[in-house]
Image 1: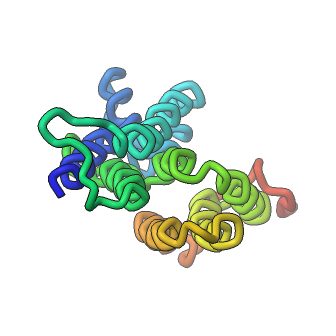
Image 2 (image 1 turned 180 degrees about the vertical axis):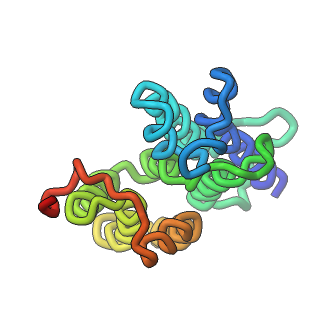
Length: 213
């Protein structure tokens, strides 16, 4: 079990390298003091511009992809590969730890982002076949409502069903994605409150049907 614990810890620490906070500090800015106060890609885009947000996304997606792809088969000196540890569950555990690290980074007082970009990277690492249905769900909700947070939550909720349909042999993956959907809803709880209060920002330029002024 030493391999499992060590690789989960490494995955968490990699995930805790928050792109917007690192790049913000290099620019003399704490992104958590701007806009919504969230250290994620959407707030980076709204407050720092497209170039900054693109670099943030590259880091946050990459750190979600790297742990589940690299770590499960990596030989760590003095540890080795534990035959008692399921490789499938180890892949998923590394992906999950990276996402949690992004949302609750030890390097930044446990105040990170909401996990969407890192979850995207993890998805590309563990089941790239599910990227397209997830993207379709995200775009569909976005163009109908203009709510980025709602699009993210509903795309995450669609992934377990897509996994059952397209990858029925990977039951562990469907369970992981169901848990991820709940976690993404939790990290977006402020978005849910704002939508219920009618004060959530819309990305109106992305909406297919815009309200007349």
